[in-house]
Length: 249
Length: 230
Ligand SMILES: Nc1ncnc2c1ncn2[C@@H]1O[C@H](COP(=O)(O)OP(=O)(O)O)[C@@H](O)[C@H]1O
Ligand SMILES: [Mg+2]
Image (cartoon, rainbow over all chains, first blue to last red; front, side):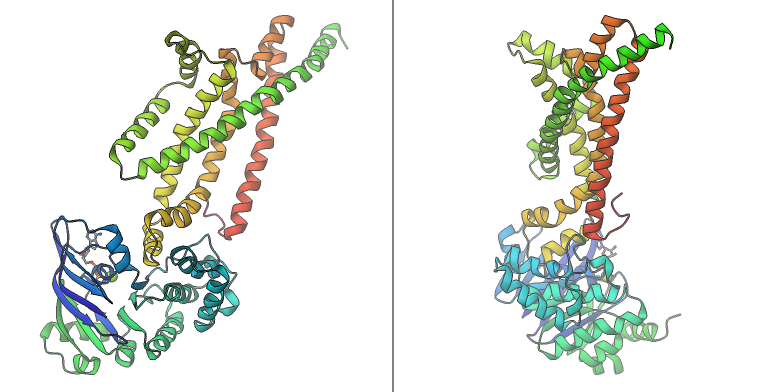
């Protein structure tokens, strides 16, 4: 579904991704973990071109793009590749001037030019799925963080992406609201949605992930099935990172 | 009543209608027309200034620089008294509309540009993430939010404009202040007449501020986003 090949990303002199290879299979859940600043967000944002990789090749679905330093890819190609995926943001980024329903219908109606009625029916189904059928006419700032994030998921789903990208979707939430978002994500995983999730929710990773990838200093340090990686880490740095997660100081 | 008070009273009453008429016939149309055109100029200029087209951006910046950096009355003089010498003679009202529109356009473009830049990067990214083009993101997501942020400062410009139209007196537009000067020349009661015209300006701007509040409330209730407008 996604193939990342030798992807590099620099911000000026700052080399953030140092040549990454990663394959995400259809229907699988990939969890990316790693210390703060290791490049998780940057990698995820490269996958839907919110950041343009400096070098490397990226394939999402049947669209592939190769990047070279100082060569600006064509907007048309970027758009086509980006439209393969949906993104769920740490800070939700809902559109504050629109109701929940309008937020979800925006992509289908404006981008995909679907009929309003059809888009509305789909949007209401999605809202029901994330457990917010009664909030269709609310504005984002009338919702709790957990509710907003669930709308964020519904909005990303509405354009039928082939893969959903999540950047720490629960880390801005109060602890008691984390569960409701993870539950929705679990259900999506069970339904066979292809997902790439940056998160530090280890329980979620253990239960849901098909693969866990540990990023460290812009490189993949280790990857594998969650039980394997968590219980038998190969690298000392992996062990150190995991133990810090379990016993934060 | 003493004779003098009685005279003042009569002048006040007699002048009131002519002043109000000049206000309704010139001050208000001048304000409304200039503001409407000015807003269009402001909006286009703001979009040009955030566009990636370098030369256009330069022109827009130059325009804003000129019109913010020179006194409005000097601009009006150049348009009305200056342009005829290069063969362009404009009626006073038209000259006024051009001057005021360009001035509103320059200040307004800065307000709108700042408002667009104040919308968080996350909104752009969310728009892109559902597949929008830059145009779609601007039109559907960024501009509607930016306009909301712009309402209070733009209404301030509007109220300033009502008062600034008095400068049109200096280019022979018979708006309210010009009328007050004419009447004063007849009766020699500057204190009374200028206070009277001040009072009418005050009424105009107060009524319009009231509409401004209503407008802000309307936007407020629509987004249920209390306090985030300012
Ligand atoms: N837009 C940017 N400009 C410059 N540096 C950036 C930018 N985005 C991220 N970085 C840098 O890249 C590094 C990795 O960041 P990020 O991908 O956010 O890490 P993580 O999500 O793993 O915490 C950090 O050192 C960060 O400062
Ligand atoms: Mg991050």
